[in-house]
Length: 200
Image 1: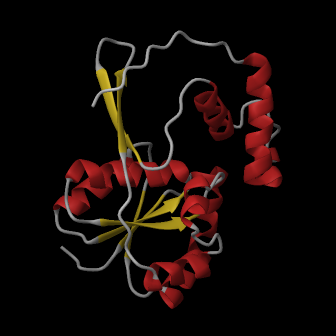
Image 2: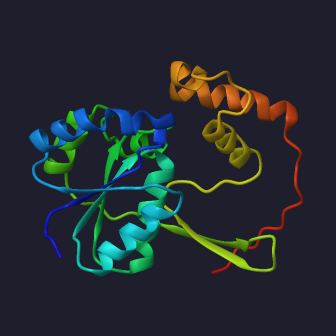
């Protein structure tokens, strides 16, 4: 197992902009952070699988390159592994809520420098268990926020770009994309029946 940090890149994040920008970003990261290895995802859930496998194998630092969804997946993989691996963030997504919460710079070069010079911090993580709608159970960790109902519908709309003309989400940027999706959901979201139980 390599002792180098691993960057897990989700090329589909930010409407594919992460993949298109990666060649330039890779150079910035090498210049401001140092040597690393990279793995690209090709499907949903793969970042969690890669992170879990690498952490179990002894990888010390796994960096998520993408948006909040990519960060969530990598965090889940590390938490499932139960190993001592650390989570790093190289932001490149639509929303960026987790990045803003931790004060991580948005610019790639600055974020890479932040990874090199920053300090490791412990943080809380939550775990959600819910029905999968087919008689089974889903289990998922979260490190920043957990939402369902209209919040989940807004995220789904942003990811699918539902109701937006081709290329509009990229032109609008993260905040306006979320605002447009929230406005659409306000008028069309149908409230589901939900039962919430909190376990100690």
